[in-house]
Image (cartoon, rainbow, N blue to C red; front, top):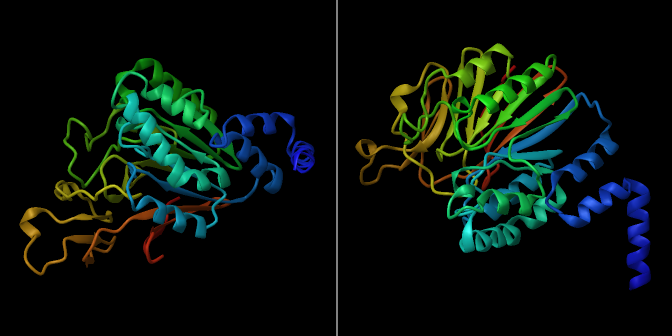
Length: 327
């Protein structure tokens, strides 16, 4: 048995390099070594790529089903919109990360999964960020990476517009991404149809959204409000992908919708009633479909050269509810 293990390690090191093996053995959930392996297989500048976006599972019993669907889609890698734990700090944080390990460890070992920090990763004590970093092996919660003709930028939970230093960092990263597809992923959205307050989610231009517009960001992915929402504001696409298992929220800010918006969530109290389906999906053409039970989903994003397309996919049935080119 020892001989076989030694042989496996030798082969692994020869194929992927000593550094990659060291990092992988230190933390199997760090996405960087697996991303290096992806580049080795597909090249550093592929014209085509496929990644998934999901978040807000919080230890839900539905999360394994979401990951099962994600695995069926065979992505190159995944990015998250945070809140994969219900409480990330303190003694409860250790328990919640153990649950995440048990429910999602097999998936995170298989695919590079780039994490972000949300309010629930930070909640419960002073060591939330430390627990996050230890679990994923990530040195920073605010970072960027490149793959092919795209740049990906992860932003932290606190509002970047309120921190001049972080705003300058974001501006530099956006400037360096000139000529690439730019994707920003974070927990707190800028626009929503859900039930978050305006103090939390402004639903209006900020210093941060002005940077997204100026540097031609392709899409901003977020979570936090447990709905699905796709809107285009000043040329920038904003998509909430927060359906990885936690309870779905009400569409309390539906009045903020603009023409062409797509969204899914729970009906407000005024629309509820005996025999009425409690959830609905609003398509880009204004068509609405009643949904009898909460739907959990993943967002699939494909790049083919200059073309960027998305699909919002029901985790249980595989049905595509929203499909669009978002260049």
